[in-house]
Length: 432
Image (tube, rainbow, N blue to C red):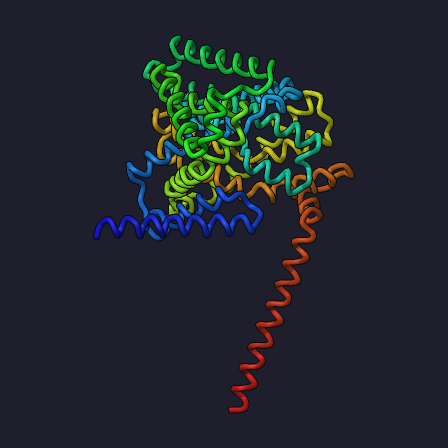
């Protein structure tokens, strides 16, 4: 009977995740936002049908490895070559300025320095899935703006590995020791050498490629085995299992077996990634969000505005014209998928407490929902600023005049409908 209950629970969870993913997709949001919403609905903050457990945590960790493996496979060295200088310089500036902002905030709020560093890392990364979705929606994916944006996002994905290593290194007890820097230098040298090697030649040839093409049913197992073997190897070396999973995906993604591996492993990756984002939703406590709603909204706006300003300013200083720097910077204004992982790593080493992680997870999730609204608002404000701004109140009225007019029409219609209902009721009472 217990076995039947477990199967029923799994069926309910996957059905709700599917429905939420479809609903958010219809609203032009990434499906992963729907999976987070499903976790909120099913978790302790919602109906309480699912609670965080060791088995869910284990699957979520596998989901992180598969997410990194997938990101690695999606990265193309050839596409990165043309913008690598601007992209790497932009990411270095983004990380440095984000750390400056959070360290200054830490001084004002009395944070310990590990917390300020983790929060700076969380703030520095942008949402790849959200940014690509927005580029598609505004028709900029294949333009020069899209090329620059994707180049910076690739550089951020590459930068995630050292950020995670530094975060985990701060939990060693002695802070950032020499051993941590040695591991970091080794990882960066290995990654840099791999990028250089792949950029100097055509795609890697997968060993026994012909045999795999004839026996395609073993491709999923072979790809997963490669991912987990590399993850285990780097984990044993103290470089983090996530680094190995990313390198495995990066190598496979730049080989002649990329298309087959992506096609064969996609269903498995999808399931594990769903579990990962469901686990994020399970961690969001709606009562905490409601009791700290003002702080959440203020932090959401502040982080999005500061992050967008850093992005736009950095790209423009690196030589990108305003017409490219502005939309690219604003599109990268949301926080990233890997920000969740960095927040969890910060909690595990004690750099941030449970409330800080709860706040970070909530703001990251809301930033994805807020991104399309922010892009529209920022572009309108940019156009208005070119003609001069008299007052902020007048500017806001100008920016949202369409929405205000719509609300006025809806409000007027509701008032008229209510008046008609009251009039009808009074007439019926008068007849009686």
